[in-house]
Amino acid sequence: DYIVELIHPYIPGRTLRSSDQGLLIIPHSRLKTKGDRAFEVTAPALWNSLPPKLEIIVLVDSFKKQFKTHLFKLGFG
Image (cartoon, rainbow, N blue to C red; front, side, top):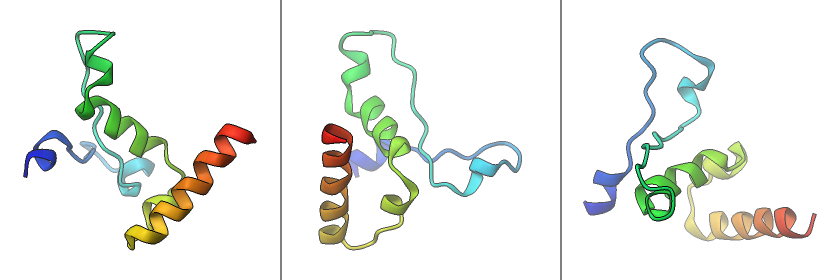
């Protein structure tokens, strides 16, 4: 319940291409040092930056495996 209260889906006021991408709202923080590191800011930013193929994975084990592969590709090209 606590985590659900911190994360909100992005629902645009009109139909946009981003409407069906499963994006999350990234709240603005007042503090650059600590505010931008807060879970409610960082988690949606990271989720929104994932490739679409990772966002549609339903099984946790499959997501972990593909996410790990994605991070290795980012880190080691």
